[in-house]
Figure 1 (cartoon, rainbow, N blue to C red):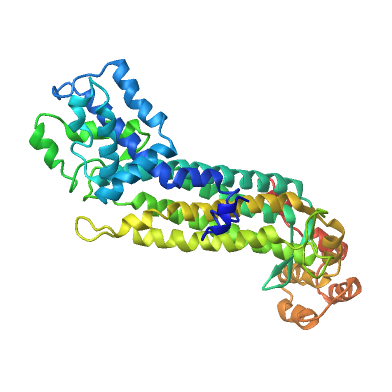
Figure 2: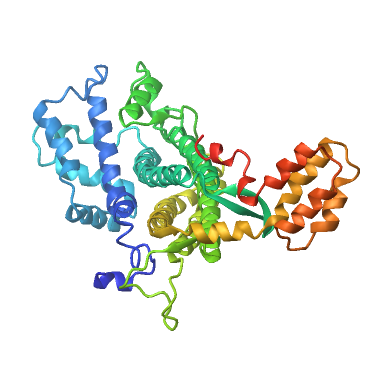
Length: 453
């Protein structure tokens, strides 16, 4: 850990900085400034291709390179120059505009066109596209981790497909399942959320101060501005939101937050289940000699990765759910309350990615305890009350539920107890023979098949 990380107020920049390197580089203040620079330069280049704008002619390859290099060569040192300008303007987007104009003063062929920098733009035109690009990149990182989790669950569901185990509903022994089928459930759920998130269209607007192309039409009334801006937004890999106020409506951000929050909640449940299975001894964890489980109890190997994931998933969700409800609301044509909120998108993504990485580490540490799982199942003969009851119902025996309830509710049964119950039933001998052969480990229905489907 670096010295300055010890002074950080957020664990994302301190304790967990190593795990957040990539996500921090996307949502940092530096990258936000660089994204604004990229959007401003891209718009300038886009307009230069429009033949009806004679005042900004087509640019030479040299001039295009000069402009694109401003983005390519934009360093932390250059970002500090923008921040210095902002300290005077007190406006972050205007500072980027002035920074570009300062650069153009040094270019003989481009300096005469400097007023086309930021032309027809409100600051929100630049900001919404910048955030959209950052969210797009951040989402790609989260999806990459979610896919790794899904792939691991897919693999384990097949690997454990024939591992019969006792289920627990309400914390009590219930109809057996297989470990693979329980893993498959989480795989299916996460796989669906990955698809849902990936299908969200990341939107952008570039239609001026109140979304009406007002200044555009005054300056160049014969240009099809909705088409021009749609092409520009598409060139950035985004989709145009055609009807907005001054701000992009953030509905797509709300969708992403809802889907991510849903995925996080599923993984939170998964982390708790894995904690439970480890607590029951169904999984042990690899003993890493250098690690300490407890400061006073040396025997312990705590399920810290699942616990860490649970806590950080909750933190991520608290922000995501707030973003989802907050960002879709704006007073009249614009208020600034979304601006400070948007700056925290990366925080929610950061807590999520820490959680995903911890789950993956936890999954690599677990070792299936087949003997413990088998022993627990073999001691639960009472769960056969369900299939015995169903066969009795099939042959219309009177009140089979009450009969089984009398013999089994709240009791611990063994094989002989179950055999005695079966012997009392008024059902065909063939059916009795079938039930007498049934063991708890056999009563898994289609769970092995479901583990692989």
